[in-house]
Amino acid sequence: MNTDPSTTQHPPLTDAPTPAGHFGDFGGNYTPETLHQAITQLTDAYQQARNDPAFEKQFAQLLRDYVGRATPLQYASRLTEHVRASSGGTSGGLWLKREDLAHTGAHKINNSLGQALLTQRMGKTRVIAETGAGQHGVATATAAAFLGLTCDVFMGTEDIRRQQPNVKRMKLLGANVIPVQSGSCTLKDATNAAMRDWMATSETTHYIIGSVVGPHPYPMIVRDFQSVIGKEARAQALDQIGKLPDHLVASVGGGSNAAGLFYAFIPDTTVKMVGVEAGGRSNQFGDHAAPLTYGSPGVLHGSRSYVLQDNDGQTAPVHSISAGLDYPGVGPEHAYWHETGRVTYTDCTDQDALDAFVLLTRTEGIIPALESAHAVAHAIKMAKELPQDQTIIINLSGRGDKDLDEAIRLLGMDKMG
Image 1 (tube, rainbow, N blue to C red):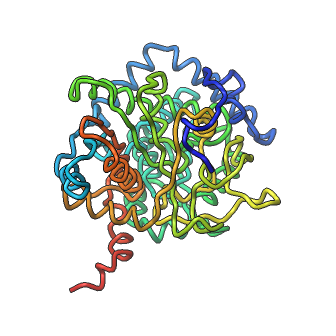
Image 2 (cartoon, helix red, strand yellow):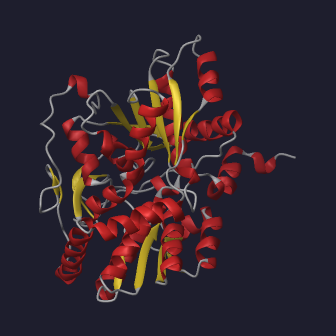
Image 3 (tube, one colour):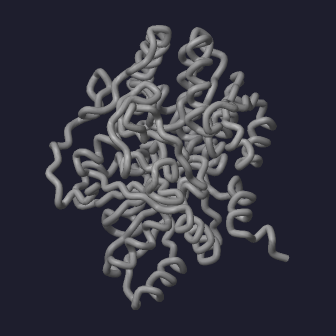
């Protein structure tokens, strides 16, 4: 698949989404009748909130005082020096947008807190969430504890095994973690279970979807709440670098951290953007989680986007060492940016992500989430081909505490004395 926008003819980029929630040919609302009232209520509540200065002020204050924003933009000097030493003395400069320093350890809190405020605005008392890596579950449990909401989190049993630290955090925060044992026991299956619960309880429950996926208005809502990342990074780059960055790199599963970084830069045509999907073990069916690289348009979890599916339209099994990227679909706005050529999408193997996980830890003293390590790995490859005056901002979407046991096992360090 050709992902180079310079060699492909693309449709023009237009304002999105439309009032019906379409990003070009993608997005929309493909949900059962039982959810229409809840989705209409959410759409109305969000439109009112985004035009309410009091809501905007409350949300901005919580981002500052509770989440700890703005997160830093940090020059990765030793990582850059390492890359230059391995590439003949020249390479682009690497910068880190430190979402790992946000409260709860990842970017997910921005959206969870915003949607929890919407829950209160709608007069609902319970929130539910799906989670893979556990960061969205922790963020939702945190927001629920802070605002006094009941919280249930659906999580596949395979992800519960891989992400025990976050499971314990959710329980300590007062959330009920509900194991999902169907399918591959990962993120897709947790999302299916959460959707079923929401259909039965929507009168009192709000489903806080954690990524830019799902039926309209979720992709727009999550993107907007996460757009603080890119707004900060843009201003910080102008202040600290003295210009806009030349490149942005972020990992893409459902795509919330990437959308949050990219959105503020979409009009800046000099800024090139790369989304990095989970390449897994190989490009074979079932060995990766890279729908934009290897998938095709289809409908999943209420919207039309790129999906990994077989010839009969059945959702494919997926694999990634990163629980947060282990998803067969992607947000519809990413599909739109892909088709218009505004963003380039590629994939990164498990092994390259593991190598980057170790390298960033040992050069910068920062243990990244395995999701973020995919972006780090690709940015390192990019930097080796760039002149020194080129700059790359990597969205370090989360910290790696949650991944330590799994990463140490995969690296074989658990067998070392």
